Length: 133
Image (cartoon, rainbow, N blue to C red):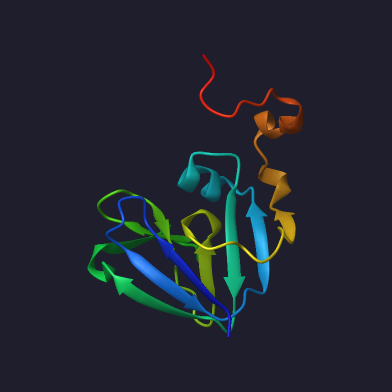
């Protein structure tokens, strides 16, 4: 069985995911843009993997946007995105909270009708190994 480890930024919350991911979506919906402060969210989805909180489960909180199934679990201390099981039968894991290698490339970009206008041509932007001087 595949096992992935993850944590929040401050390290208070640690977890494991036992099992495989079904898909890896880059979501461009307006809710995910607000959640991440970025162009899209990068989430792994599984209908069969199991989430095991190793530490800090009491520091995890979840916000569900009223009138939708859109939710975000995060660390109350540092704000890092964390796995969510709020939709029955579905585990959603933000890719950036994993400490282990992700075994797959993104499956698809979704909700492109909401894509940020500044997201066009990002591949043409200059690249730096660190903060530019």
